[in-house]
Structure formats: structure tokens, C-alpha cells
Length: 457
Picture 1 (cartoon, rainbow, N blue to C red):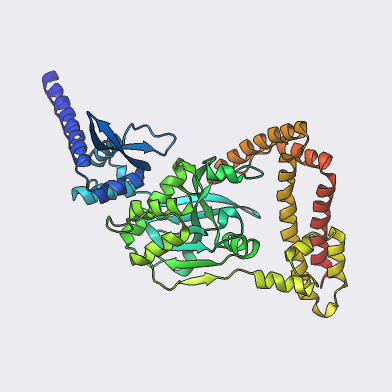
Picture 2 (cartoon, rainbow, N blue to C red; picture 1 turned 90 degrees about the horizontal axis):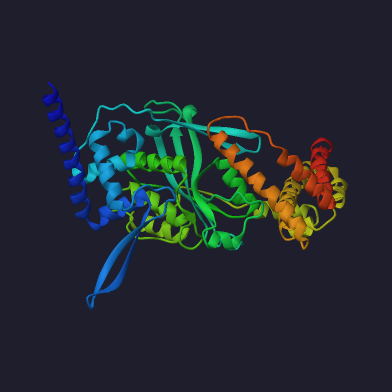
């Protein structure tokens, strides 16, 4: 009996060895498209250099993982591991559908087809009123669109911004009716938790890259109103199998939070969005390497992955804002922002009551914009203070704030209530002590908005 058991163990080990050896050989013989797709899936970067060996110039290829916590020494080792899991782990398809389907493509085989997966996904995101749950079934995604914001005025937004619009079903049913559908925006961004983000950190990889969720309303507010940028939506023309691979891979990146460093020129929203597509679409699709959102859109059109005409457009609201300003007798938002806080309120209060409804909307909208800008400027003032002791104190508070915010982000994903911290009160006291005028103005502005809502009728 002991002999039979030993033989069985030996045979099992031999089979595992054969799978690993087969994977090793298969990796060596992947064609260029297959290799590129695997590198996109696993976030390895390929380098090629000419090196002199025994007097002859030879081309040497080597790889570097862009992930911080990658346990593999090479893409070949990672490939071997995945192929072994493909044949031996019944949960591999459920845990890593995009890679499972990639191996299906190169082997022509399917394993553990009867395995039933829990396809429900849920996370929480921060919104103005607290936290909002995004919940849907990964196998019931109805539409994915490429969403591109037009060029902005700041250096970091000069080339536009790449995102994806997703519509999915909140129930695991066929022919999902509209009442059970949900929509959200999924994008690749820099994980900025500094109170005053730095341009140089964005250029040289000072921030991590992450997948971010937003509501469509949040995206429209940010780009259409706050930054006066259009949003152009193009529905992706891809198969349901590609849709399932895309969403599975994107959510895996979201949960692992290990996408490497964000670099404005070489690892940005467009390049990382491209990699998600390259990792999950058919091998022969999207083989170029665009560096900008417009470049990605151009390639999507050339590969017939979107129509030439956009599905819909959300127009920027500068005309609306300028209309508000003109109604208040001003030309630019800077003119409005530079006026004393109480004077801004009096301008709105003194306008004829014949058009008070429009005045109320104008004033509240512009005052919210001014309030957001002043709050953002507080951190910049503290970081650029000429008083070194003041800067050191603020940096210590800012670091504690970042730790607190990061922990609450983790809790939000799990649907847990945020933890409280003394750092908020300490930071408020810091601002009140050293920037009393700005803090006072913030309080007055908030109070004036409340007064306007009640009195401007």
C-alpha cells in the first residue's frame, strides 16, 4: 500500500513537471503578438539593447516588472506559473479570467469549464454626500465606451484624458431591464493623496498608478464645469468575450493596486488604458503603442474598434458660466474671484428680483467654484510658506492626513464607515491660526451660499 501511494505521488510530481516544462517551451515559442499581450496582462516592460559579445554585436532582450510586489524573476517564470494553474487550479478561471482566456487562445484547450464563478462585484466610492456603492455582475456588462476629455489649460491636462464608460446590470439576469442597469466611469489615474499635488512628481513617477471609479455626474462636473472641457464618448466595437476579459482584468488591477509608477509622458492615462485593451482584446487588435488620449482614439478608429462618429458628447459649460458672469456684470471668473467675499454677495442681492431665479443659480454656482479654489489654495500657501518651521509642521500634519485618508479609502471599498482622526481638527486649527483671513472667508462663503438658497427667491 505504501509503495502504491509512493508511485501515485511520483506520477503527480511528474505531471506537474511536464506542465511546467511545457509552459517553458511554450513561452519561448510565443509569437510577437502573443508575447506582447502577455506582457500587457502582467505589466512587464521589454527592453532591447545591442551588446558586444566576443567582438560581435548581438541584440539582447531583457525584461523588467513594473509592479512593486511581483514575486517572479521573469515573465517566463510567471507564464510557467499561470499555465500550471490553468491545468491544476479549478479557481483560476474565476480569479483571473483574462489570463485564463489568453492561455485558452494559445493552447486551444479549456479547463474546469463546469466551474461556477461568483461574478458579483461591489465597491464604494467617495461622493459629495458620503459614499456611494457601485455594484454589478462582471458577466453582465452591457457596454464599454472610450470616454475622452478634451485638452485642458493646465500642463497635466494639455493632451486630454482617457477613461472608459461602463454600463452593467445589478442583477445576474439576461436581457437586463433599464431599472436594474448601472453606469459608472472607470479610468487610470495617478494616486495623488498630497494636499498640494506636484507637477514634477507626476512627470518623474512620484505617484503610483491606480484604477479609479467615478460616477458620470462626478466626471461631468469635473470636466464640463470645473475645467471647461468636452467629453466625447465612443462605444467600443468588441465581442462579449472581450468585454468580459476587459472588465475582469480592470477589476483585478483595481483590487491589486500594483500597476507601477505614474509618469506623465510614458506611463499615463492613455498608455495604461491602451495596455488594458491590448491585454484583453483579440491578439491582432490594437498593436501600436499610443502615448496620448488622442493617439489612442486614432488607433481605435484605424482598427475599427470605434466608429468615426462619437456616440454622444457632453459639452463644456463655459458659455453657461460666462452667462452667469455677464448676468452679474463681470467678464471672467478671475474678476469674480478677486472681489471681496461680501461684495460678491451684495452684487447678487442687488440685482433686480425680476430675474432672481437665474441670479440665485449664477451666484451659488460661482461661489462654489470660488470656495473649492480657496480650499485648494490653503495647502499650497502652507507648503510654500517662507517660514521653515511652519512648513515642517504642515508637512507632518499632511503626512498624517494622507495615512488617515488612505485607510479610509480601503474601508470605503469594503463598505465600512470611515474612522475618525484628530488630524482633521489639528489641521483646521493650524489653518485658523496661520491663515485666519482665508479660513474666515471660507466660513463666510459657505454661510452666504446657505443664505442665497433661502433668500434669493
